Image (cartoon, rainbow, N blue to C red):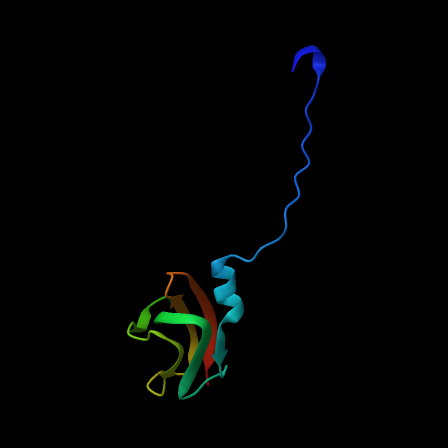
Length: 101
């Protein structure tokens, strides 16, 4: 602007929850610690589950779920810490740490 004039804008925003955040918020896993199974439940359709050991080695992939609930059988796993990656039907993913006793 000429002659030193300034233009000021006030911008207000409202917080929002992104799709990935909603996936993390609505995801229910249990029991934790687990022994023989892990129940997975979500508001959106679960597309895929990927289970990793604590070193990052992929142990199991289940990619034929297409449901909001799934029970993963885990009796064959050794005791320890695992990471379960959950992907929804939109491709959003979140990872949770679980322990097998």
